[in-house]
Image: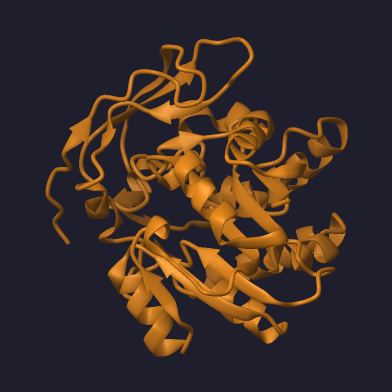
Length: 324
């Protein structure tokens, strides 16, 4: 699918503290989904911040063009692999999970660390293809999704039978608030993260839980792969957080009782998709090779070991916060 150029806007200063940004990476292309253009990242110049962001970034009216071939679309085939590679990946992934004792955490990760919470009403912001909602529904939660992508929203409502609010979260109004609101790899995609979290706060019951997963810019993977780190994903990732900046944003939105940590449970996929060979990428379709799979395996092992010594080095930040 040939894509048109995306209209962009300048975004020179830090969203959280207002200080000017310094160039971190220049002219990064979207090797995953083939969005046209080259994109640069900045990092806050303040010593006590650490936020990273896209500058320039797609305008709100244009950002949808960056999702035409996105994985939440049923017809997307951006990650292709041979049957042999598929089997190899399954074996090595299972082996690393077993060797590193990740089975329990993987189960908790898949249900957004809500396994010890009594099921109630749950909203997933940016529900994508609805896979996580279906999983939470099977665990007893009364689920609903929110999505701005009409293709993804239609798939969830029609194929999975789960209600979805199509539109910005700020436009969702409910008569009964939620016991839990979850965001898995969503906050990094939005132009105004604080407004998003304020809407989450509004939609939660008293003592309701907010759970966020997002790429960790302070991760071992970013340190190792640099501009080739999978977590950058230009131009869809507009902001990249560490534990501190993510907690800061949640506090500004009114949340309290914050608990944050980082996890390496998804490091296999990060290692596999980072620093991909340019010759294996064509028009945004990444053909997965045995080399990619081995890189994912060894990276998972290294990331897990490093996390034992550096608790901030996980590939993803996790934040749980409460509405008081």
